[in-house]
Amino acid sequence: MPEEALIVVDMQRDFMPGGALPVPDGDKIIPRVNEYIKKFKEKGALIVATRDWHPENHISFKERGGPWPKHCVQNTPGAEFVVDLPEDAVIISKATDPDKEAYSGFEGTNLAEILKEKGVKKVYICGVATEYCVRATALDAVKHGFEVYLLKDAIKGITLEGEEKALREMKERGVKILESL
Image (cartoon, rainbow, N blue to C red; front, side):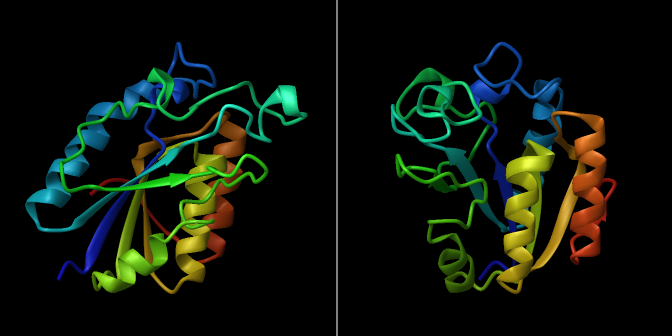
């Protein structure tokens, strides 16, 4: 049973430059994320990919009074992954309820159960955006009792200030920040 899991957070077309809700330079981490996927797969770790998987009328969208433009709508090109996931990757779809926002890969999903069922003790996290879904996923992983590592060379935030604040908070709450692996 794998003791480790790599959680790839929201590496989707709409979060890349040119997408509906781009993380500046989000595409620059794609090669590094792909390297980590390959490395973790080779050592038998579980590969998990979270994705925003919004219905057409999601509460987070501006037209419903939310803060964001329409993005990552189910079964649209913008919701597609931009990294090379293995066929056996566990795909976690979040924020699927039209009336609930969810930044964490654990919120409203069975991710914690899947990880525990597979015997996972340590999770390594990469992806976008540092101060939103990466932060929320990492903090929830800590709450669920996992040993949590953030792969700093494979994350991107929306602003440098927001990213630094999120990194400080994650570190204070028990997330181990790794410059690289």
